[in-house]
Length: 211
Image (cartoon, rainbow, N blue to C red; front, side, top):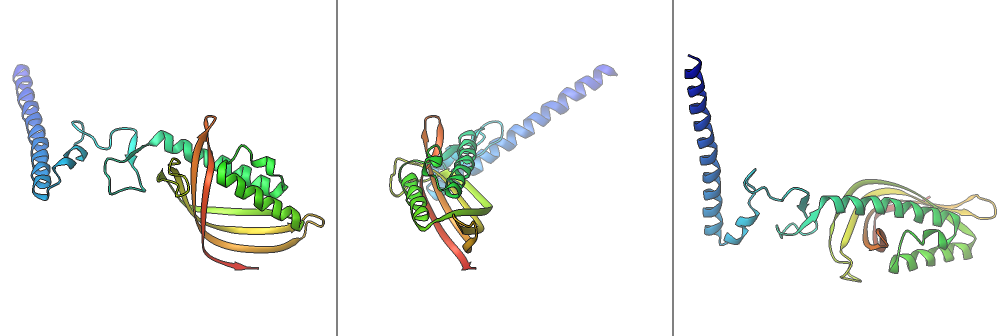
């Protein structure tokens, strides 16, 4: 009887494998016919078939800024590094603004972003104020999209959020003015010396009110 059970198990297992294989072949055939009819047979390489042809491959995801091109993938690991470096860079920039010290953001940004922040700090210093920002980010998207000012810079982090921008008097530390905003911010990052630094910024206020 034990031998019979073994034989029965082998038969059942064989039929299961056959059915699974047939299902996979059928799925591939349906995908092939569908793509052939639509004239997009070249997209067959993007079909996700678990085990046989997983797509995207492990460790990669579709570039969220170019969803029309299924072949445009980004590394999950690299995207996480870009995101983490932006958080670090942003903290250094906020410290530089509050201290009124342009040298404090040397390791946070480069190029246009660095020049722009240094100019803002110089303007605040001339006015006798320092700036303190409070930011709450509600959405973060990391991907690749060319910087309009320098197409060679591709990594982009897009943030949506809200916050306050407050100016304080350097002499009295009293609040001079404060603004509440909602924003859409786009940060392009460039790898410099093993870290990603903010290279360019485009911030679009969504709404705001002076207080």
